[in-house]
Image 1 (cartoon, rainbow, N blue to C red):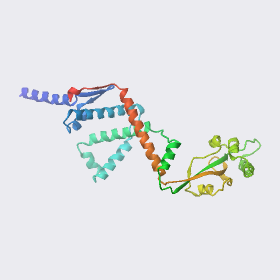
Image 2 (cartoon, rainbow, N blue to C red):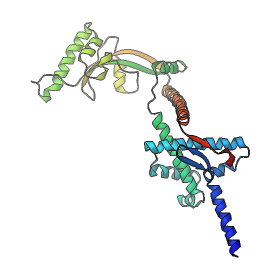
Image 3 (spheres, rainbow, N blue to C red):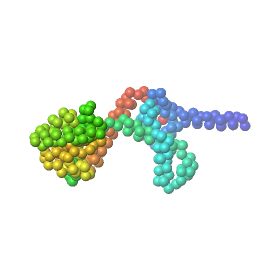
Image 4 (cartoon, rainbow, N blue to C red):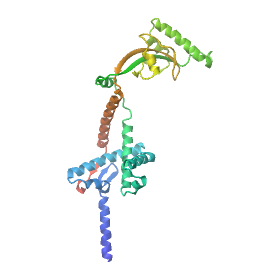
Amino acid sequence: MKRVSALILLFQLGVCFAANTIIAIVNDEAITLQSIEQRLNTVNSFDEKIDIVEKQIGITLQMIKVRELDLSPSQEDINGVLNQLAVDNNISMEQLQSYPQFPSLIQQITDRLSILNLQQYITRNFDLSEDEINNCISNINDKDTKQIRIAQIIISEIDNSDLIIDNQEKAVRNFLLKLSDHITKGASFEVFAKLYSQHPSYANGGLSDWIFVNNPNIEMFDLLKDGEVSKIYTTEIGWAIAIKVDERYVDSNLENCKEKIVYQKAQQFYVNWLKDLRDSAYIKIYTDKL
């Protein structure tokens, strides 16, 4: 009887050791048979098994970076996915938690959210060039939305120690009126903007980016005639005058087009980043264990 018990125990230990057999080493971390056994059981060929191991190596490399950069998802984010999963499957949270695979599901959700956080972090600073934006616009046929560019002179205060705070607005408005009068008589708006504007756009003559004509304030600028100076208006940092510089018509889906280009660039950048990450990592696959 003792012999039989010993054999059973030995068999159980053997299964445990087999399940935790190391399949690959990624830097200082091990990928065990147990962690990918379920996926390995769904394939037959050696190449398919290697492909599963390779994918797990990629996940492991990314999770190492997630921990290094402290990008793990919050419990609130994980609970949000679980709640949505329960709703999508028309079950209660208690029913979802009762499934034997629930701990594995938690790990999958955590990994996916972690990698999503990493992707967003690595590709966070993507901007489009002027050529890419123009290319996007040129490929849109139904150009039905108007955009304009304006130039502004924005002044928040007059540098005069004799002025009290209550008189600053009056002093700024009087100064802008003088500038407006000179511009109307032929003076260069661009030169005055570079000399007097207290907004960062002064460097390029007060010129703005392209603006959609989609609210009353922008419509006011759009109604300006060529060379006409606007009335004085209030901004977040002071008072201003403006002129309309240019206009164009673009499709209302322009932003969607731009987002698509940014997504494609970010996706390719992340793929290249992952390749570099793998190239710099220590990786050892024990193919004989498959």
